[in-house]
Length: 368
Ligand code: DAH
Image (spheres, rainbow, N blue to C red):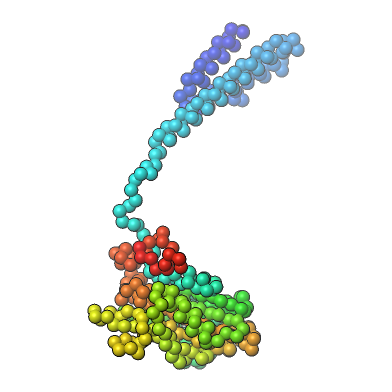
């Protein structure tokens, strides 16, 4: 009996030591230590023994159980280590591989310009806000002082949805980023200093108009804000954006329902020998001209009231600029439609290095 146990133990230990992999080892474990394993069966016999038998046989059986368990643990550690070594030998990562010859993927000029604008305005203390592209006509028009019958509504070539919202408001694709002014004032009160970049939609399409385009809205609401603050802010922003101090602005009286007074801002340009326009200098100088750049003005007190603020206490200025147009001017693209064709050759040519974030210190317009 004792010899039989010894032989069986030796065979099991030899099998365990020779187990080629985890699966074989597990089968050996089940055969010995599993519920129906032979070692477990021996342990069960202890219950039916006399105390004396148990005294002599117990330690022997326990010793076999311990020896088998230890052998299995040792073999398992060895198998795991061998498997890890094999994986490490196979899964190599060659860090000396050169980078791809052509960079893959680039940042679209519209995204790049929006990042540049966010960087410039963050430096002036402006937060970035967004609003929904599917708007209701109250935020897009009414609260911006364009009542139902206002003729300016017709100028916007609006895409309307067939259904109204729960409150009976007509739903539309926003025609400008100005509704974000209303949403920000209502959500945050005053004082406020924000820019709101985003997509806008109008039913319009030719070489300089696409049904979807991008605007950036600016809004400052505080006490004692005047036209001088507006002019300084626009000048500072445009000099930083075009990366030149030679930016001359002309503020022209204009009309927008949501500003009073309203000003359109022109920037002076020169025409070079090749007939190309370059920004800089007064538009009144010989060989120069003025180019319309953006709309702005002091926020109409009716708009401040629509947004629930006290127009006797607070006033401010607002502006709206076409982002695509800014990109065309700065980076020299001349067909707006190509912006939205998704042509990889265009993107490879005009796109920006995704690893070069625009910063004021390194230059907001680093080329790829
Ligand atoms: N929302 C105007 C448009 O899309 C642009 C604009 C003009 C925005 C004057 C303003 C502003 O904030 O003050 O044509």
